[in-house]
Every structure is written in C-alpha cells, then in structure tokens.
Amino acid sequence: MSIDTSAPPSSARTEPDVQVSKQWTARLRRSAEGAFPPDRLLPDRQPAYMASWVYVFGVLTLTSLAWVIITGCVLAIMGPSWWHVSSIGKFVNSLHLWSVETFFFFMVIHLWGKFFMAAWRGNRRLTWATGVISFLVSIAAAFTGYLSQQNFDSQWISTQAKDGINATGAGAFWNVLNFGQMLMWHIVLLPIGVVLIAGLHILMVRRRGIVPPFPETKSASKPEMNAEAVPRPAAPADADGPE
Amino acid sequence: MSPRRPRRFNPDRDVEDWKGAYRRYDIVKEGFIALLAVAVLVVLLAVVFSSPDDPAITLKTWSVADPVDFAQTAVTELDGTSGTATYGPPYNNTPDAAQHIGFFEPAQWFGVHQPIDTAHDFVLGPLSTLVTQPVTQAAVQEYEGATPDQQSAWTTAYEKAVANATEVRGRLRVPPGRYGPVGVILSSLTSMSQAGGLDGTLLSGGLFYNTNYTKPLLFLADGTYLADKAGAQHLQGNQWGMMNETGNYPGQAWLWLYTMWYQVYPMNQSSNADLEVWVIMMVLSLALVLLPFIPILRSIPRWTRVYKLIWRQHYRELAAT
Image 1 (cartoon, chains in turn brown, green):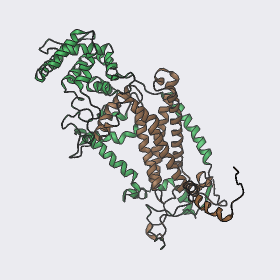
Image 2 (cartoon, chains in turn yellow, blue):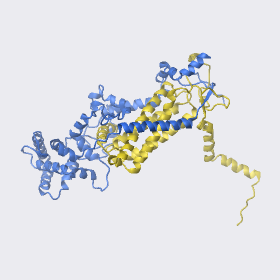
Image 3 (tube, chains in turn brown, blue):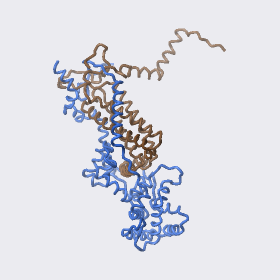
Image 4 (cartoon, chains in turn blue, orange):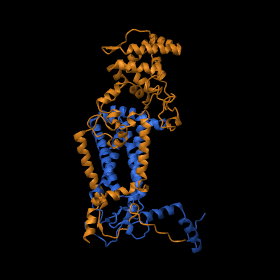
C-alpha cells in the first residue's frame, strides 16, 4: 500500500479547514485566547489607582492557601494519626492550623475590602460570587478538618454540629460523626472545591481586571454609557505611570 | 440587528473605563514575597503557640472516671429515654422529634438513614458478645423475654436506685431494688466498658476495618461527662459553642455569626434552634453571594464612603489635577 503525501488541491484544503475551525477544541482554544491573552493572564502593569495595602490581602489569602495545602499534604503522606505521636508531626499540624487561621484572617479582610470597593461593579458580579462561594466552601473544608483531628475537640464539635446538620436533613447523607467520611471530604472533595472555585475567581479577576474607583461626580450627571463595558487590564506600552 | 440600547449609568453596578495612567506591577514577585512572608508568619505562630491536642475521651475512660454517670446514661439507652433514643431522624422514627418551622421539617424528608436501636445497639448487643459470662447472658435473656411493662418497671426501679449509686474504688455500687435483671445487665456493661471492650464493640459493627464512630460518640454524648468536660473548656453552646476549641486558641472564629444566633432570643430558648439558625445562615449566605443584585445593600459601599480611604491617593491626585 502506498501513501499519497502530496498536498491536496486548494479546493480540497478549504473544506477541512472550515470543519477544523468548528471543532470544539478549536473553539475552546479561540475562546481561551480571546479571554485570557498572556498580558492579561500575567499582567506587568496595573491601573495607577491600585495603590493601597488592601490589595495585598488577596495574594496573602492565596499564599496562605498554598501553605494549607502543602502542610496538609505532609500530614496526608504520614497518615491521620502521625501528628499525635510525633513531635515533628505535631509541628507540621501546628503549621497546618496556623496557615488555616491566617488564610481566613486574610480572606475576611480581603472580602471586606472588596465589599467597600463595591468590587462587583462593571460586570464583575461573577468575580464577587465566586469569591463568596470559595469563602463558604473554605468554611466547610476547615470544619471537616476540625472533625478529623481525632481528639477531644473533634468529639465535642461533631456531637454538637450533628444537631444542626441533622435538622436540615443533610445528616441523612453527611454524617459528621463518621470520621472516615469527614476525613475524605476534608482531604479530597472540599480541597478540590476550594481550589477550583478559587481558580475560577482568579481567572475572573484576570479577565475583568480590578474594579475602578467610584466616579467623583454624582451619578445623575453621568453620560449614557454601555454598562457592560469591560475594561482592558493591560495598559498600552507607553502608558507607564509612577511606581 | 438593532444596536444595543445604552442603560442609564448606575454607580452601584457600572464603571467607567479607566483611561488614566498605569504603573509597573510584578505580580510574580509579589506572589513570591507573599509566600515567604506567610511562611515566616506561620512558622513563628507554630513555634510560639503550637496547636491544641487534648486526648479523646473513650467509653473506658468515662466509665472508669464516672461509673455512676455511665450507668445512669446506659439505663436510659436500655429503656429508650436517652437523647439518642428519642432523637428522631436520621437515627430513629420518634414521632414529633424532628426540628421544624411550621410545616417545614426537612429532617423528615429523608427519614432514618443511620438506624440506631439504643437498647440493642448500645446495651444488649454488646453484652451478647460476652459468651463466657452465663450470668450476664441469663440476665439478657430474662430481660428480652419480659413484657414491655415488666421491662419498664425494672428500668424505672433501676433509675431510682442508680440516682443514689456510689462509686467505691472505681466500682459501681447501686442500692438494692426491684429492678430484676437490669442490675446485672448494667453492672456487666459497666465492667465491660471499664475493661475497654465496649469501645471496640460499638465501633466494629461486625467489620474488621471501621472508621464510623457514630455509635460510640452518640453514647458518649448522651451522658454528662463529655458535656462537663466541654463546659470546663468554655465549649458549651451557651459559651459560643463549637467556634471555640480547647485551650486559648482562636478556633473557628469565622463561625462567629453562626454561633451568635444561638445566644440571642428566640433561638436561645427554642427547641428548633438548630433549624432556625441554619435557615437564617442560608438566607444570609445567599444574600452575600447575590449582593451585587440587591438594591440598598449594594449601595452601602457608596454611602459609607470607606472607598475614599482605600483609593485616597487616586482621589488626591484627581483633586490636584
């Protein structure tokens, strides 16, 4: 059998190209390239109004989450009982605990900061919603962590929390007294949820950019405009401002 | 297709495109520095404060430390009057036990998913494994063969007697009474628990591997020993409950709002407090997610003008130009 390696005639080339451009893969690539060009995904410039310590708490939240995951992975490698019998394990558990505490501390400040900026403006509602949902899922992740400690705190918190969960009906399927079930939720399902939603939140921030300040003039005197306008986060190359 | 009709500018929903200056910003460098800074902070906190780890209470430690409370609890498991025995869904079908707000009773929707018969699962079943103790087996058979009225008469008599029980060198001493085989049953159960046998029996459920602690935890929670220990650590519901943890640690401080509702009227006096608090928190959480769509609430940032502080440099520069 011989293989014809000669190029197809131009008329024959056109039809497959059109078909390729309609592929789901090609469409997804085009859509991703349009939404997240490299200079928007990893910007090297930001609008000049981004000059406040409040902006630091978003990245501090993310880096705390990174340490939560790293220390959690070490605990997972050695098993759930390790930290009770090893001084090194106890230290790693302490790192895990305090990275969770800093994670929530920074996240709450970040949340309040974004609230007072009304950071949902300019078609950033999904950015706000994913941020709040990641906060709520993080609470569930931390809660199952407290249930997975296998100590007095776990016993007390689980026996108290069961009444609230059972009252909603969720206790039929989500048993806070079942250590195995809670551990799996804590180390698999909820971390996946937090990372996915936080990842979506970050992508939304990169896509929409950071919210501009409120206009100085009264809203009634504002001109008519397209409310759904999306500001480009990346600046022109010659638009450099003061550091 | 007709062009999109522009909407009127709403300052709580819309923004003007930024046409001002941009500044250099190294996002990767910032992230790396933040990673190191948080690492230093977390290591410092871990070195200075460590983490709490009060040992778990077992049925053995409970029955050794307070055999009277253990026996008082066990008899309520036997006669079906304990907290677990009368809990309702998802453990059993006790009528009118599920929390409700009017006709809203979600615990009933799913019914019993973790069936627990406290008399059999917590008392008679574990004792039936003590096959080398004929006196105990005879007492169990006598109790199981009796009529419900007779069983009730025995357990009622035992409850009265055990109220005056004493502890002598870790052993339970119950005044004599007309409680039939119940005395032997609960004495055997206490001894079994003090030897550590009840912990394993309640956990195993007939399996070699098991990680479901539902039964031992429910039994433990029905007594006062666990609650007294928690009270001493300021962990009771009326002490801001489970947002705290043992020792002087921040605990789950982010649950302050959830815990707060249990401290205020009418939830602090309601038998349906858990459901009421959960409904409140679900509504508030949904409102937080949907805040950008809720008039008045979404205007609060503009009215409070805290943003002036956040963007003070921007407004200062704007005023100067």
